[in-house]
Length: 171
Image (cartoon, rainbow, N blue to C red; front, top):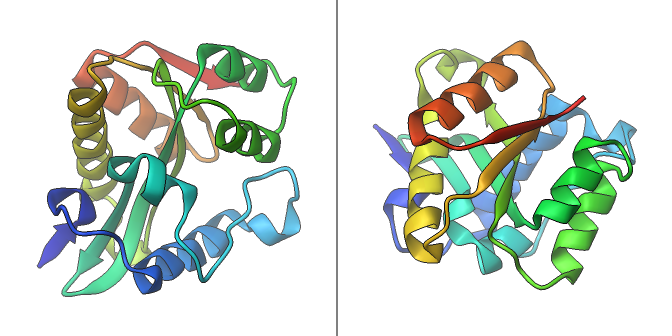
């Protein structure tokens, strides 16, 4: 059975967050690129504490098979990132040190283990997360992303189209 953490009001466990971080680190090879966002195992993530609906962990029969992680952000930071004035790593540090803004959301991660890809799980997780975020904040944010793969770019477009969000992309 497939489950999404956004469907529950329970806090994310450190174990599940670490499993998601391992998938992220492996898929995006973040350890080799200091300009990408870095994962830090063993503690609650900024997302899980400040925008819990935007860190959506996907499980199959209780085992983590993927996740979606997005960050609320100001339009100013979004523009600086999309225009290559700051790196992803700098963006996330600025988000964490700034007053939380809800006028844009950075679609940072959508990763699903191989056998579960192509089933719409990342799309479902992303839409569910953003709908909950929009209800909680009463905002319709600009969605922005940095295309890592064709499927990632397609996902961002589908999410934008489904929710009627303006979209912006880092080139």
